[in-house]
Structure formats: structure tokens, C-alpha cells
Length: 115
Length: 115
Image 1 (cartoon, rainbow over the protein chains, first blue to last red):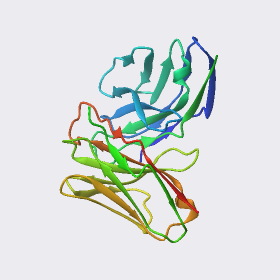
Image 2: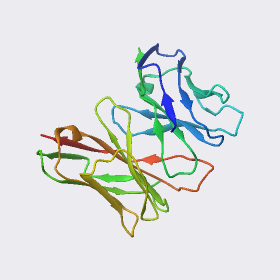
Image 3: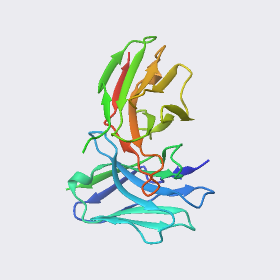
């Protein structure tokens, strides 16, 4: 079974600075997807960024980028120029790609933005 | 764009009562997933449906049942409610074989409180 580990229960960063959230996973598959979802206090899960395992290039979405290290099974999220609206729970998630099992989530990291 | 619709948004029940949650997936999405998220927890996969057939089963209690109807909406039925069932219940939908994304689209959740 796949597992996703987020070792940082909480992170704090000053507004406008950069923060990196860590995620590691365990799988025996070679084709899969990785995601970072954001869950603000309004609670809906919102996709931040996705990475296909077969792509070597790290995904980037505006201020959000990932560092995907397939061999190390590591998938960290970097948030640049942190904004107050970035405050939320961030979940790293894995999908085997077949679709049947849905997503396996990590425990989440609570990101606090200090003004 | 249409999103995943869940109802009701909030539900309060007494112990041993029954509750039903509804989910309307994004049009043309063929797969529905149900997740349970306890306070301060990561979402736990309950059950999924593909083309109206049960696709996979996670940590769903025997007191819970679910189905997907001909119009692709899904209902989660919970009986003999216990205090521990108090949680946020998410529905998510996806196009199962869209291998270029692997993404699940989440509804805003239904918050169940059992008194």
C-alpha cells in the first residue's frame, strides 16, 4: 500500500518570504501522480499543483513550485513571496493513476503566515 | 465551471439516528469518491464508484452504505450514528481514465455533528 508522510505538522513563515513544505511517499509503482492540496478554513480542498511521475521537469504554478525527487520519493512544495491568503492546511497526496483508489493523503502541514 | 455539489452543508443528528449525504459530481465525471475527515485529521477514503458500480472500498464502517444513481449522483447513508461519526464528509469526482491529470475535484463537504 502507498503511504504519504508529511513530517511537519506546522510551519510558520513571514509574509513575502519563502517556505518549503516536505513530503515523502512510498510506492512500488512507476507511474503515478502527486499533488499538493490546500484546505483553507473555508475547508474545501483546492488543488495547488500536480506532478506526473514520468515527467522529470518540476511543476510550477505561479508562486508555487515543487522539487520532485523520484528516486528519493520526495515531493516538496515551495511557496515564494508568501501571502496572508496562503495560510491553510496543506496536504500532500498520491494517486496511482488508475483512478480506482482515489487519493492517499499525508497528515497535513498547517501553514501560518506572520504579517 | 460547474463544481461538485454536496448537500446538506451542515447536519446535526442524535446518536443512533440515520443520516444521508448527497453528492452531485461534475458533469461527465464518471467516478465518485467519499472521504471522511475527522477534526484535525487527514481525509480518509471511504468508498468509490465508477459508472454506478462500487469501485473500491476503504475504511467505511458496516453501518454506512453508499450508491451511485443513474444520473451519477451519489448518496452516503449512515445508520446507528455514533459520536465518533462527527466529521466533515467530502465527495470528490473525477474522470477515471483521464490519465493526464489524476486529479480529484472536491466538493465543499458536509459537516455532520452527532450529539
